[in-house]
Amino acid sequence: MAFRYPTTFREATCERMLEGERPEELALELEVSTATLFRWKKQALIDAGRRPGTKSYEPDELARARKRIKDLETELELVKKASALFNGEEVVRPKGSARSLKD
Image 1 (spheres, rainbow, N blue to C red):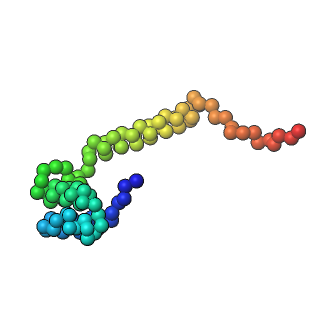
Image 2: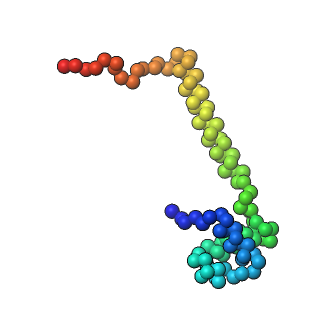
Image 3: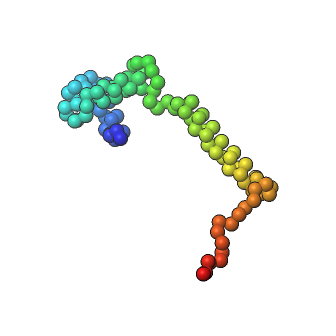
């Protein structure tokens, strides 16, 4: 599992890099890998509108649509099962006997 830094820490670090501090120097000071800082800087430049790309706070429409479809399909299956149960199409059997087995 990847280590996650607090959002406030990341935002403050990105601000420092956008103001001109070098990622190599910040890596030593903050004990964060240089590669991580370069990745953060790249995304910060996109978010600031200085580079083309997908902003980190823009929702992924396709992912949201797929999640919504999955939720609706799950809900539909539950409605179908409930409908079959109430229409008498499905026989309800007890889970177990109420009587205890005595030898």
